[in-house]
Length: 344
Image (cartoon, rainbow, N blue to C red; front, side):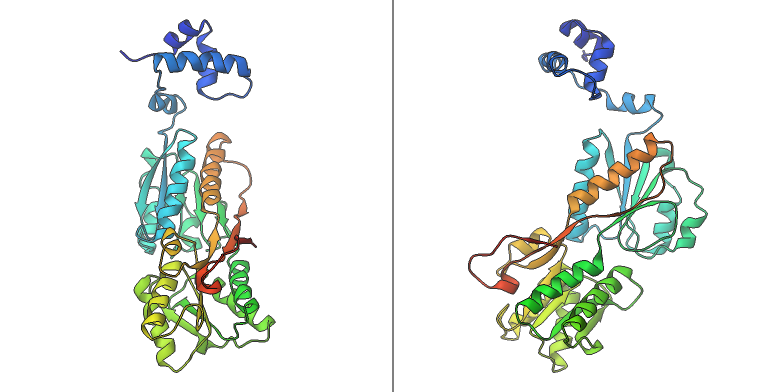
């Protein structure tokens, strides 16, 4: 038979309200009372009925997270961060895959799951401002990523221009003088544009070449795209001494081609990626990478949804910058002791 709040209250010799306050983690409960009630909870094996708790508030206890690429390691790690953050507030996360397609992003943002979710966290790629301008659904929406929308929704992103400049500054500081960029998108992509901009600004400030001949555009952002882009640069007769890639999978693909051509990483060509995914930390040559604070992004996204729920829809929309750092590894520093990550 399930253990109830009444059972815990009787065992602890306190009121049901006091037990409820402990279970719901209300701050005004004294440490001694919290410990007393917790002992009874542990002794009886009480488990709160989260579904009933959410229903009493008119909620489902579900937050949707819509991502463009579930197969991309960055988004997989970001999803884990959101799930962990939601669990701390007794919410579960419903994952949705948009494929970065505008029609799917519109469908998700317009609330086709509105009856089963309390909030939506969306990382858009192709969605336009007008697609959200007439959004009738009142389910709280939080945007992730670098697409800028002048709309009344919280938006969480890192500063891509600054992050790119940090990566290029690291390469220039190591004496690299011809730094290529791979991963500029052939179609519209604000993240790619921002990272190219940061790459170019830092090179120009150092008096180094930043022409289009050093930029390789791609249709996708996977390992094969990075490999193909690196091959095109080398086949064109360019021999950059460093490469900054749009993301880690592209950087890993590029390193494979560099090594197949009989060149060494980093002695001949140093490589920096972006996103600091687990795969880059365990290759034959570990990857220097810009590391967005994915845990903070996940936490801030969940907290933004809950703030809208608890506040009835309202503080003013926020533009939140999450932190990032450059993690220096063998692909730029070579073998041997690797210093700790340098925070940007």
